[in-house]
View 1 (cartoon, rainbow, N blue to C red):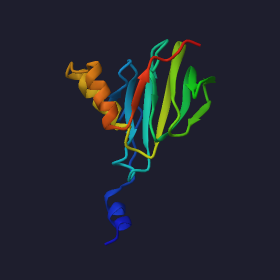
View 2 (cartoon, rainbow, N blue to C red; view 1 turned 90 degrees about the vertical axis):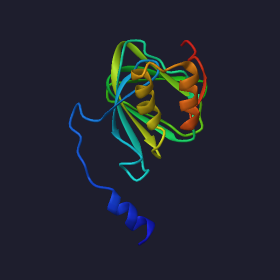
View 3 (cartoon, rainbow, N blue to C red; view 1 turned 120 degrees about the horizontal axis):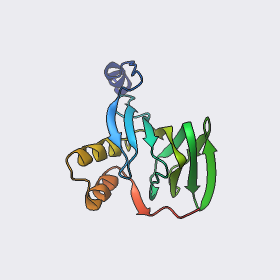
Length: 160
C-alpha cells in the first residue's frame, strides 16, 4: 500500500455543525473552535472559528506556515511586515509564512475563520485551551507551546 492509499483510508469526509468542534483558545482571550486539523485533513490545513472581544490583540509572531483569515463579523486591523491593513466583514486577509504579523479586533469585537496551511500549528490553540482549563497558562508554558508548534512569539503588537 502506498502512502497516498494509507492516507486515503484514514481520511473521511465529515461535517461539523455550527457550535461543533473541539474547544481552543488564544492566550490573549479569543474563544475558538477547531473545525479542521492536520489530523482530519491529511496535513493539508487547520481551520479555527474565533470569537474575539473588543480590542482583542495577538502578540507579534512569526511561523513558517501561511495564514488566511475570513472576517465573518466585525472589523480587524492586521500588522504585517511593518504595515497596518484593515479588514471588515466579508474581507479575506492572507499572510505568507515567515512574515512577522499580528492582529487586533475593533471596538465591537469580531468573529473570524483562521485557516493555517499546511496544517499543524492549529494544535497550539487546542493546547492553550487545555492549559487555561488546567490553570497552567503561564507565559513560560505559552512560549513553550509556541515553540512546539513552530510559532515564534516576538513581542507586543505596536499601536496603530
